[in-house]
Image (cartoon, rainbow, N blue to C red; front, side, top):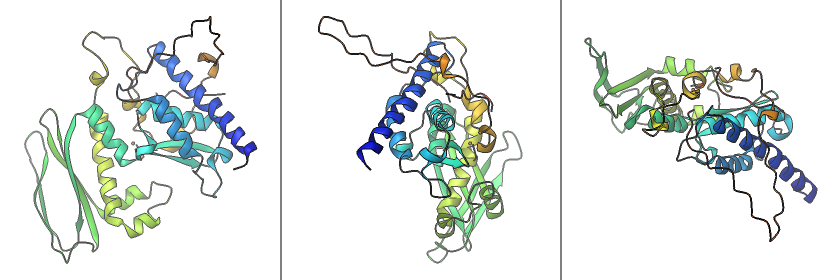
Amino acid sequence: MSNQNQSVAVVEEKNITTQVLNKINAFQSSGEIRIPKDYSPENALKSAWLILQDTKDRNNNPVLQSCTKESIANSLLKMVVWGLSPLKKQGDFIAYGQNLDFSPEYTGNLVLAKRYGGLINHSQRAIFKGDEFEFETDLEFPYRTRIVKHKRTLESMGGEVIGAWFAYELSDGTKDVEIMNMSQIRAAWNQGQMKGNSGAHKNFTDQMAIKTVINRGCKLIIRGSDDSVLYSSSEEEIVYDPIVDSVNTSISTNANKKTLSFEEAEVIEDKPVSKHQTPEKEAPEASALKPNENPDQGTPELGF
């Protein structure tokens, strides 16, 4: 990259990431959102910008050039609202035409399920043709499913995938299993951009099937969660809850929302400090916020 291009990239980074951070700080100050205590918006935005520089759209064009600045800013905001890190592959930036969006990966949904839904233990497996697999559903309350048997052999491993399961345990003692056959899994894949035809889907079908069933299981856990983890015992005010309203919306729907003006956010500029002047205090750290298979309204958006 030439020196000129590097300078442009630095300026664009400062313009977009700084404005997103200012908007986040403004939302926090007004009590509209809370950031998880174990999450650093500053670090996430920096790592996201590095990843975006190498991210391309379907036409192999850099998304920082082909996508609108508004959609780039909104995708960064969505990432922070959910408290996810692209550096840890908890979500991906995906271009839909000129609109950039941030979509949680299965690892991101696991993070959300642990953070908000009380997920404490989980296990998942692909089911191959030739496996001995049996499950049953309790016909009395609470209608939970359990696996009676899943026995495989060396011969069946790596063969034709016929399904997958995701078993989980929550902190309240709830135990359940999400099971999907390949018809259901392929139907879910058809909702995606690649329609299940990517190299990963074809060459690592078992792993992709496992990711899909995890996403489906986590969706219910996340939607049934509350905001208690974001509060101390002395905090009672009501705040915006993006998990309930946002993670259950398709990416295509989210791409056409009305945006907010950046005029609402306080822009903090770096100013030189003389030796006789007391430095201004830094903006307070993000305290606490709340954020689907293609994990609505509700996610604040940015505008220029």
